[in-house]
Picture 1 (cartoon, rainbow, N blue to C red):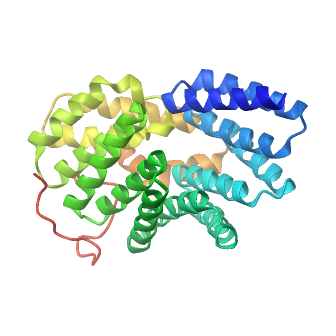
Picture 2 (tube, rainbow, N blue to C red):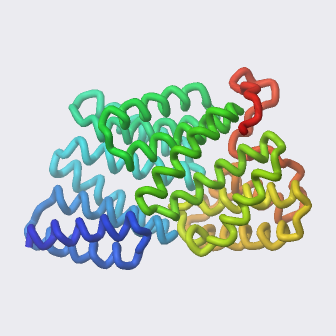
Picture 3 (cartoon, rainbow, N blue to C red):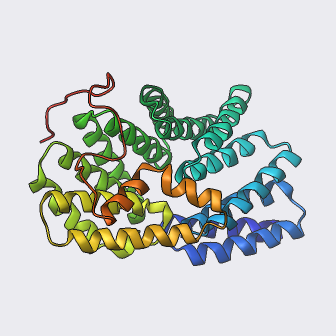
Length: 334
């Protein structure tokens, strides 16, 4: 059963990277059954964590959180500190997405503490990526940038390209929030190239949207619109998975089309709001629903746009004040 479980887990990982969620779920559920038969608590924990990621990618938020919590309990029982930290990273990213940055901060603080006491360079890198996203969600952009730069340096030293893509994307988010247009453009492009090389079109789409957002920010609609055309043509790739950050993509596309007075803007706003409400319905807790709708800047922007009160064409992800010392006036990207 151990070898069978290992093989099924490897298959599930491959299907997950390719975006084949149902196949990944079926393989991981079979792997978990095999590892349960073998009474291997550590491999059960790893499997539960991976199954949580798979369910999350399908917008099954409540089951995903359940699997993450079960994985965390199993890690603690098997005294696997490194894997416990990794599950905390998953939980932190989940709670950032849901708008609960305080809970996310608690998980990532525990993850960072664990990785101060053990030698686990890969886990440490994931912890830094998570810390960057949490600090970004809390609008602490300087701290977020420090974590993101450290994560990129760690990933480069490890020469693990998927991890480097995660770190680069985290840095791109932060640089966008700080108004560092040239630097953020470069990071979004690097992240897009890495996601494409690794055949992750669902993740590459968010990076392409990031590039489009930079062009919008500097007023280059002629460069932004072809990227929007590409994203909308490939909507089936990214629309239905939280892993692709579809709400961010809808927000960015809608803002660009609105700025360009493109008649497609209304349909894109409506579809974005429809996906937002689908994700709200996937949450089985009223407090989670409220946080998701009111504490996540992208979701607030989508609701305002749908209601016809969208007055901004600047990146909604940052919410940095215009006179903030963190904003740098880079020249427009070429």
